[in-house]
Image 1 (spheres, helix red, strand yellow):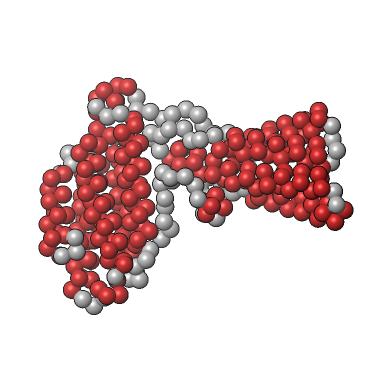
Image 2 (image 1 turned 90 degrees about the vertical axis):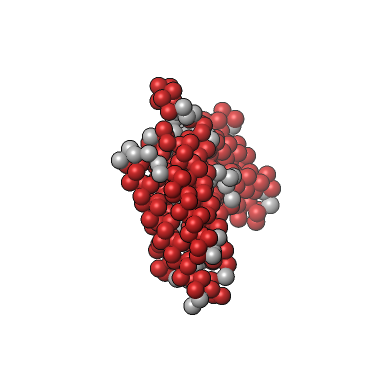
Length: 289
């Protein structure tokens, strides 16, 4: 299982440098700083301080540009997957600007080009980056006014609910990865897949959002809490009645998510109160809530 994060928070170093890319690979850009390794060594040996600082500064900017562009490609891929979304931050554009600045520093201070030629080189670097990796979309994907009036739901509410739900699903996957039992991990993966499908259906047709949001909150919070608590003491619970109870709770959660997904796909009303009562009853009955 590969945990997904909804990226509601700011990027961590692992996000920028190590996580699997969603929007595309940028090996060429990542390899570009290597070109300046030997010139930096030569400048260090020769004592050319200004040249060395320019090369170091330019290389650092190229590394930063690669991280920004990579993050921008991921953000754009996530934006394109969604029906409703705010435009992503201009990370690819900022990365292209960092490349242009890097080229200017290196051209002006390391190779001795004049100001005009250095600006030309910087402009070419910026344009090459924009042409290769594109720029960030700027239009917001919003609920059409007629649909908003029909459903009584605002775009911001849909985006917030989807982000919140996907963040909780990512937490469930994270805690599920800690489980040693393969059967439990597989069941949690099916639960997460069904939950994501429910979220996608709500995003496709948000008329059920006010009721569905309560259902998602109750079930996702309940699933996350029991999985987190069970994962923390899985060895203690092995071969005990509580292990069987945990399996029963997960089976109930999986069944209810599948039922609600079918209701949504058939454009039927959410059986909300019954579903919530089922979870509360099951958690109380099994003693894992």
